[in-house]
Image 1 (cartoon, rainbow, N blue to C red):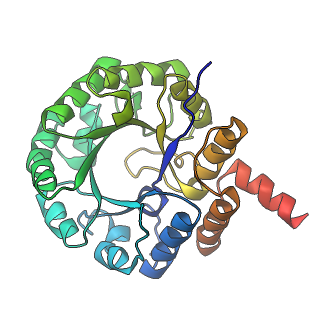
Image 2: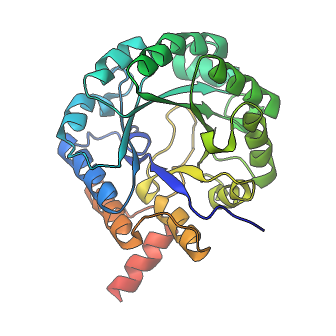
Length: 302
C-alpha cells in the first residue's frame, strides 16, 4: 500500500485544545506553548479564536496572544473567525490564515452557532471575501461529519453539501472533522470521499477526536486514501463544549509516533513535542492525554 511520503500536521492545541478549560490560562502560557510547538518543528499552529468572550471566555486574550508570539519564518499562524466582527478584530493581529466552520448537522449548527447550515455559510461569505482581498488564506472546517450528539449518524451526502457550499463561497481548504469521535474507518473514509467530490486531495485534511479510541485508526484509513494533512492537539487537549462527553482531539504526539514508525516525514522533533505537551499539562495540573508521551516520559524517568 502506498502512503504519502510526508504529512503536514496542524497543532490546534492552543485554540481547540484550551478553549474549554474552565480556569483561565494566562496569555503568557499560551504564547509559551506556541513557541514550544514551533521549536518542535510545527509549521501550522491554530493559535486562538476571535469569538465573543461571552461565549468562549478562555479566548478573550486573543489579540494579546497573537501580539506576543515571536513569529518564526515558515510557520503559518491561524485563527478562528466566526463572523465579520471576529474577522475585523482578527485582521489587526495579522493572521496568516483564518478558519471558518460549519456543521454537517442542522441540529448541531443551531446549538453551536444559533443558525442553520445555509445561514452559517451566508455569514461566512463576506468573511471569506474580505480575507481573500487581503491575501489571507481561508480554511474551512466541517464539524460532525460522521456523527452528531443530537442527530446521531450523519450521511455522507450532508458532508458533500457543506463542502459544495464552502467551495461556492471561496473557501480554499476544508477539514473533515469527527467532532465527537464516534467515527470508525469506513465511515470516515465515506465522509472524506464526499468532501473530495468538491476539493482536490491537497486541499482536504482530517480532524479526528479520540472519544472511542478510533482517531489513529481513522488517521490511518484516510492516509490510505492519500490524505496527508491532519489536525492534532498537543497532549490530546480539548473537547467540544456542545458535544457532551467528547474527549480531546487525537494527541499530536501519538500521530507523530505512528507516522515516524511508518517512515513518513513530519519535520517534527518528537522529544521537543513531548516537552511542549508536558509543559501545558503541568500547568493544567494533569498528565498528558497521549499514550506515546506517557510511555516515553516513563522511559525517560526510568
